[in-house]
Length: 246
Image (cartoon, rainbow, N blue to C red; front, side, top):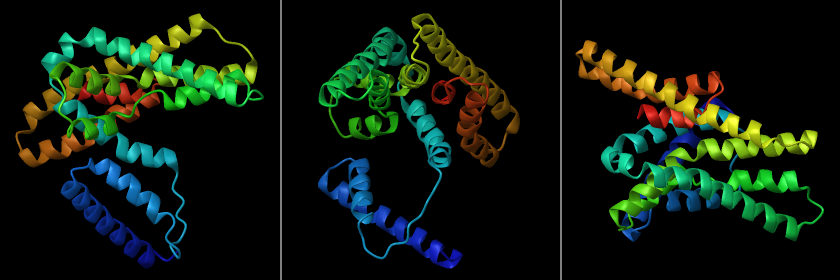
């Protein structure tokens, strides 16, 4: 595709995003629902060129700022008070969902190995943080329940990632170690949190010295990618690092 045509297609997609967001607002629906539905319909429009983008690149570009935004606006006081409940959901609910999905998948497809069933369960078990916040913004729930759901969606990455990694390893090697899985989970979660705390403290010190609102805005925009990329670079949870920074 020529660069000019690609730019025209990008502009057209921006127009479609604005129109879908407006329709969702008029109908009282979460914008994410309208955007997902519209994107699915656009995929079947004849004549549109096929665009291939690296999924990992898309994840790095869009996920960190959305996570930082969600963590920035969550109420910190209630989050601290309900941290035990949030942790139990972020770990227990993810493990339970993974087990249920694995069992149901194996019942439906008996020829599929248990490791593959567990990998599928690990993929679908952690609720997405951005989608959860988008839906909860338009639903009136008790404050405690809202904090539990928002907090769980922000911190469940480590559980799902550990389950997925060890399901893949079990499928390749045929071995599974509970001790190694617990150790890996501890490293991912605690390591990500420590990275986030370090980046957040460094950012606070930097902001105090900048003294210019435009530089502060630019530094804040870069903060999400710095946290995420640093966490992934040292092999801890980039998602938890970004959330903790926020």
